[in-house]
Image (cartoon, rainbow, N blue to C red; front, side, top):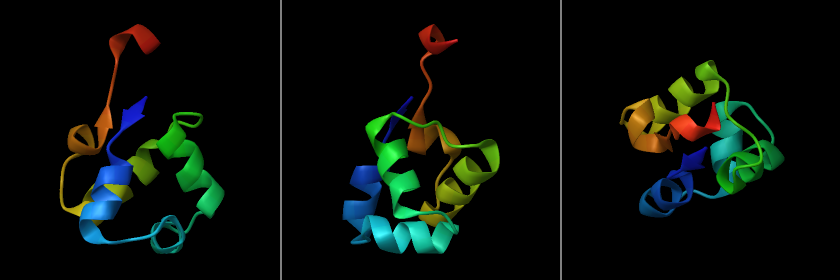
Length: 67
């Protein structure tokens, strides 16, 4: 799943470590989500979108071919 997390972090001037701390996850989790190696759980996706003040769809690009 593609994500706009790196761009959102840069726009808000937040490091991966700061975002991880705010979400209650490890920095490695943020790295894995950003690289597409891990798909965020629905609760985490919601927390991320709420943190940045946007919808889940604005943070993550769901590709139906991934089903």
